[in-house]
Length: 568
Ligand code: U2F
Image (cartoon, rainbow, N blue to C red; front, side, top):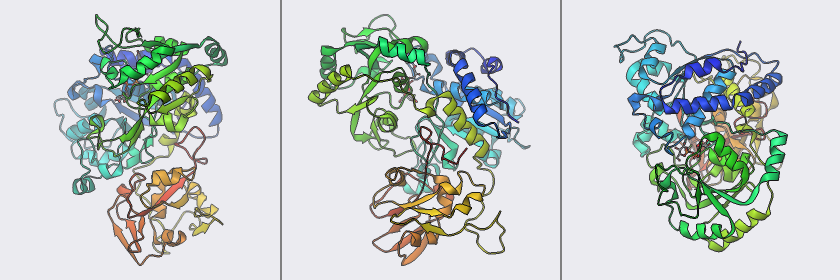
């Protein structure tokens, strides 16, 4: 049984020393300890009746190992990326607070020690049983485990979770399919289940959303922030001088400067970086805590388009700032932008921070075309006028993250062989009575399984399933979204059947089974129904004008998109 623990002493010892990145993570763990502890108390109350199994968990942070080059640690104090460290610090804290048996490795030597590989025999495959129930790592760590666990990685890979900032789509993850259809990248093709990849934001339902946390405020702090906001103070998002190089920035900075005092936290050694105009009050790179203080005063937090999808906008919004960011038209993606090139996803990034744009929106987040001077000018004046309250989505609070990670740990299972569905013949035994066929809801194309199906122990439970057909050229991500639902790849196996087509009134001339990341789908042109041949290719992402896709949608909790209503 796992028991919540709020004392972080042993965690801090385990994180170790000797690297700036580890010190940053430890400072963060200490700073947020009280917040985690009170969240743990609340979740404990909520889950009273639940038995939580204590898991043996290894966390191997590949990108911090010397063997991967560790380019991040030397840049911690110089404006380099901190988002990954924020996330790893929070993952470690969540696992520790949930009361699991945790081991942490940031070097190959430690990895070998924990896996029981004898020293000096690094490439020797692990022959015995895996001494862990779960291994959290990243793409670097995965590569290292492949090299050093050899063949046994294949045997044990269902226990692995890959922390993958921007996400990996199934078409890129499937080695054979990626190679045949041009989806091969430097990172992908590990043949994992899509949901074994865990992202920083809920980028795609094909992956699991891991996330991180932001600072939470009590009522007194909220009130004092609202009272003390400086309505003409703007803070620019970008701690590295290169982030200030945006083309045309002079024009909109001049407009902004007409109304507001502009602050920055750009790293510098001795002199002001030439990219930062002299009218900007630069504080230099600040410790996280001091940045929070600045965010409490500022009315506006403004992004210049880079970095993409970082934690800072959430921190700003949590401290009562309005986040103003550029819309990308056309959207940025691995097909047209250097930063995303080679990343195992075709996701289209519609602005600097699509999560802020789509999940939070106005009045906290305003996304506009920065080249339109009139719109920009009017927006700045509007921002100075309106009052907004500090806001943090539940899924980015400590309680939200603990709840989500708890649900994943207790329910996600990529190791047990999947029960075939529907039952192939009557001699097959099912727990309880077999599920009844689809039921058509009156006046709608939404179908639902009969409610007795929920007695089966699937996760997410079958009761959450709503079957939809996408429009031609529409992905299942979009199709579910437009019905106020979310696509759930774990439920594909229940709709990858002939009956699903007839339930949606598709008349199949023929039914074929193929490896195609858009299947199951209906092609109107030939009245052909395509079933998915390989479960690893079940994918919510992806669309083609030739197909109407079959989509397994589900409901989600308000502020916790990763979990369906009956998922806890
Ligand atoms: C993202 O990485 P970044 O580190 O560039 O993301 P940011 O949103 O800038 O912020 C990360 C943290 O840096 C902190 C701040 C955030 O929690 O509190 N910080 C600070 O301590 N002092 C300062 O003066 C300014 C900020 C993303 F997270 C990565 O995954 C991507 O690789 C990267 C590139 O897109 O962007």
